[in-house]
Image 1: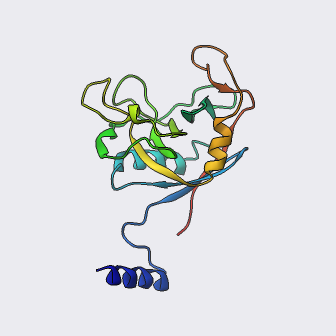
Image 2 (image 1 turned 30 degrees about the horizontal axis):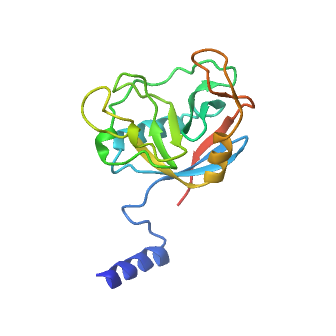
Image 3 (image 1 turned 45 degrees about the vertical axis):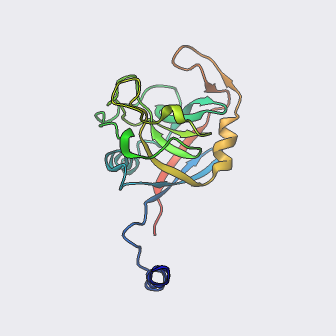
Length: 190
């Protein structure tokens, strides 16, 4: 069995064909460095489709990581450099019950206290955050939908995650003192 898998993988490589299970990769370019992520469309199809719709529309360009909490996560994708909220698409169904866990380096959809309220904002976990995982069907236990993971640039994520922060108001209580701007998010060609 292993020999067949190795041969099949080699054939895909030699022929330049991507296997069916190949995950989509994107690069998130920031003024602090680049982060390459891999999306899991098989286990989080709605979240990935939603995220890619924002990517393809250029929505994330000029948005900031507005919430940075050391040893927890970095969150962005909803506010421009003037800290004005960008108008997003309709909220999507929460896919937190997909089996993916909020582990260090994973991407998840940010949301309000309403289970199905995720739109454009996402976060990257700086450590394993088990308490964010799906536990049950209640509003308190539903969790946050993981839809991808960092495959390159975790050093950039960590650097952002240790940025000094300041508090402006209740909405921006963990705002990086030195703005972290997403300059582009683009799909990587296979």
